[in-house]
Length: 458
Ligand code: BES
Ligand code: MN
Ligand code: MN
Image 1 (cartoon, helix red, strand yellow):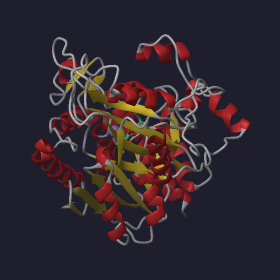
Image 2 (tube, helix red, strand yellow):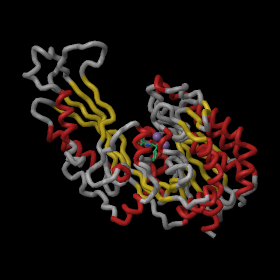
Image 3 (cartoon, helix red, strand yellow):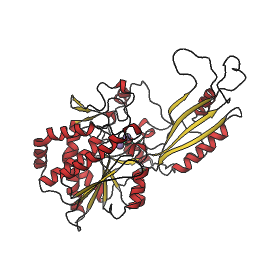
Image 4 (cartoon, protein in one colour):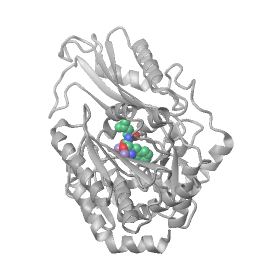
C-alpha cells in the first residue's frame, strides 16, 4: 500500500467526503430525547445506505428495544483476519442552543473546522471508516474482512447494544475491534488511547418538609434540603481533594512511578490548557497533576443541581426538595455496581435526621486498559507513524466508552482506540467542531491499520 496513492484518492474525493459528512450531520440524531426518535431512525437508514454505497456485501438496520444498530460487512476471504469497526451515530443534545454561533444541525465549515453537534463525537469519526473502506474498495486494497457496527445509544449508556452483542456473538466474530471516538494530543503529536475511565452515575433526592414553606415563618427551625444537599456534597471531598466515601479507593490501581513519569513526559502546556477552558488555576487531588487527575484517578462531580425557586425575581421559600445528578469516573479496578452501592450507603449515612434521601442509579460502565504489546496496537501505531511521520504516544483518556469493557468480556476482543479528535473540539458543548485535517487524516490512516493488521497475522 502506497501513501501517495492513498493521498491522491483522498485529494480527488475530499470535497465529496466533506459534503457527505455535512449531510450526515444535518440529521439531529439525539438519543437522549424521544422528540428526536424519528431522526434517530432516519439516521440509522442513512448510515446503512452509506455503507452499501461504500461497497459492503450487506447492511441492515437492526431494531432493538431502544434505538437501532446499523450492521454491515464485507467478507473477502474467511481465512483472512476480520476487523470489527465500532462507532456511534447518536449525538448529545445540543442545549444550550443559544450559545452556538451557528445552528447545531446546520453544519458550517469555518477556518478548517466543521461546526455541528456530532462532528467530532462521533459522526465525523466513524464516517472516516466508511470513507476509508470506500477507498480500499475502489483502489482494490482491502486486505481483510471488515464488519461495521454503528450504534445509536452510546450517549445514553449502550444498554441495548450490550444485549445485541450477547445475542450475536457468531455474527460479530472477528479478530480486533477498531474505534475512532477519542482524541490525539495535537495535530503534530499523534497518540493512541490505552485507557478509558469507568462510570458510576446517580441521581439523588433530598426531602425536608413535606411541602414548600414560608422561609420567614419556618426558616431557622426547619432544615432546608437545598442547604443540606450542598453540605452533603461538599463533605464528600476533603481538603486534599480526596473523596471521603468509605472504601471508595480500596480497589484503585496504583500506577507505578515509572509509568507516571512516562505519562508526564508527553507534550503538555499547562498555560494553553487553562486558557482553552478559561480558568486561572487547575484543581486535582493532592499529589497528582491535572493530567493524572483526569486519567488515572477517580472523580466525583456534580453534573446538575436544582431545587427551590429559580424563576425571575425573589421568592421567599424554604423548599421541600433538592436534587442533584452526580457522576463518578472510575479507574481500574473499581467496579461501578460496588461504587454505586458505597455511594448510596454513604449518602444515607451522612444524611441528618431532618431529611429523607433517595439515591437512584443510572447507567454505568467498567474502566478499561489496553495493552501496547499485541498486533492490534502495533498495527495502529505503525499506521499513525506512516501518515503523521511520528510514532504515536500511548495515552490514557479520561472519558468513558462503557461498551469497550463489555466487548472484551463477551467477545473476548480487545479494542483499538485510534481516535483523531482533539480535546479542544468541544464535544458535548456548544460549538462542537472537528478539523477537516483530522477527518482527512483519519481516512488516510485507517487503510494502513488494515494493511499492517493483515501483515501481522500472516
Ligand atoms: N466519545 C466519548 C468518550 C470520550 C471522549 C473518550 C473523548 C475519550 C476522549 C463518548 O461518546 C462519551 O461521551 N461517553 C460518555 C459516557 C456515556 C455513558 C454517556 C462520557 O464519557 O461521558
Ligand atoms: Mn463518542
Ligand atoms: Mn459523547
